[in-house]
Image (cartoon, rainbow, N blue to C red; front, top):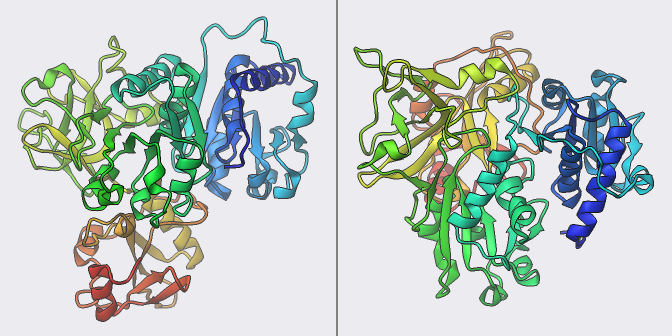
Length: 532
């Protein structure tokens, strides 16, 4: 949204200069370089230039702070970090812990924030570097590792064939055109923004408009200004204020991520009489069980044939929903879910099949934790998605929730254990449980919430339950030890003050602070009269 326009020629020159610079600094094949900046064209040039040098780019979430940022850089094994000056203050906080050996390069205006001591501005170095391709470019192609949040212990590096396959699938399955203009505000450290979005530009020549983050007030104005035809989106456009420019847009379809299409049914009326195609997909960088909804079934994130299930062997399996522990029958095999029964989505692994293989993570332990054995037959293996879905009688799949201790908030993963650890530290090591609570209504405004109930152990002080919004401005969450309270019972109590004996509080977005939650406010929130 800065107004900068990058051509293929400019991208080629900048990425070539980066490749030469990396080689000169010893960042060639085998080296890992962390990329820590907000979404902008330079982000693409960075990982492309690193790929040309043979180095691996570890794409860090721009929300990482403190322990999470330290963990993200160290678990990737980064020898250098390139950061946007808009995030220089966050890196400065942890620079001493990361040590002097880590090379640090800044990109952007110094007016945007302070940079860590010892960091070097990248632009002057690029100006002096050759703009021609490397003579000995890497033979194996690119490696891009994705480290989305501090609790991810490994990152997920998609090999080149997977990158090309995902981008090509998006282009052909969703019937994009060479003259399409894609509008994306999804973060570029996510595969959805980087591969399905930017990948269309790199592989098929489409134009991509990158916005740093979604703006409800600017959405329709941007679409008209840049003549966008494809909107890669979450549900938020449906809650954007009406714009007089709406009737002048050029969009011909929306591409949804995960479960956001379910909000189209009650909010899609804003499109008036203009017919827009609505397609949705479910997937992850490393998963082998991606699915897509290609015929506009409202609410569905994908489809898999119930008549020919082995053509694409993904399954929903019965689990304990609070722990995602697989349930097994008397033979020791997993139990498939019946239609309408929520279960864990898994994909059968076949390393000989490029569509079914699982390449794993940087961490061998993390890779092992995502593989189940003896799933539908003795000796087979399956990838565990960690997500709970439900299938109807026709085979349409619907996203239910992030499983285990993970929650989704505006496309981000939020770990309840990390929030527990942060709160416990702030409360003098009090025992804290963070758990999901269901909020009536299907509005996206009421989704992504979680409940917090703390039991203090310091001087007999007791914290009451708290129902609050799940959007944290900064992701400064550590990775604490596991301690479990009885979340099943707490989740069942919900956030109704008539059922919960302890005091309840809710985050008032207008006041910017927590206020007591009484029965009257609970009724207003449930009815939608008061916003979260």
